[in-house]
Image: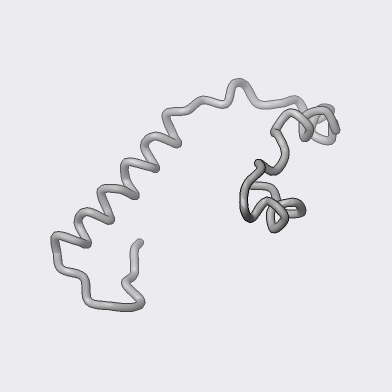
Length: 68
């Protein structure tokens, strides 16, 4: 569900926003992350290290604690 909380978009603008959200959702569901991990590997520290760290940039300091 999409809710407009501010502004008054035209039907065309709203349709464009919904199309972008649907395209992103379809792309995310198409990416397969492989088979699920067995429970004994859930807490493996090496799995977390493979995800990568903060990327350098102007606001890299703000991303040092919260990944993503």
